[in-house]
Image 1 (cartoon, rainbow, N blue to C red):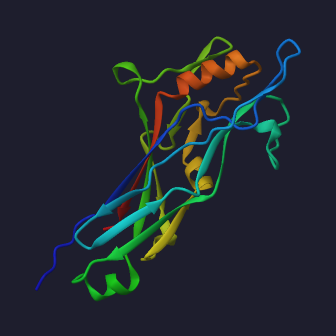
Image 2 (spheres, rainbow, N blue to C red; image 1 turned 45 degrees about the vertical axis):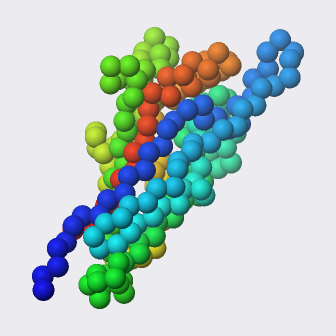
Length: 206
């Protein structure tokens, strides 16, 4: 009996909000303000014909940080904004009863497609104005989306997408060095950044 082959897909959404780590500002002799918030992603699952894909995002952290304070960064100018991350998304495929023997033994080939949704008013996202020029805060490489082949293209039941892989698939502030030297600059940037969402679609490679 010929079995139907369907594409299995799993969609994760990252909402970017006030995502700052080691930013410290001193205003008029007051104590420094240090806000620490990470991106949040819900655990998502997908149930398809061949089996079930689940993704555990609890170990993933992506931050917009002052890169001059990040260990290993070659940026020395204070208050330079940039993306940094740690951890990964753990992906698990569980074959259904009746799936092909190779699928039950080896799993499936998968890829992740990274894209950015602009969720501001009228389907657009606010840009950040820096030194008189407007910059799009976040976009995916290759214009609309960027594909990552998981597990080097081999079938698997368990694999990961690292924070570094996600960041490397994105363009932050059109590649420009953006400084946020005051708390007011930080707040304005955070407000504009809330208009962007990162989508991670995990699909079976047909």
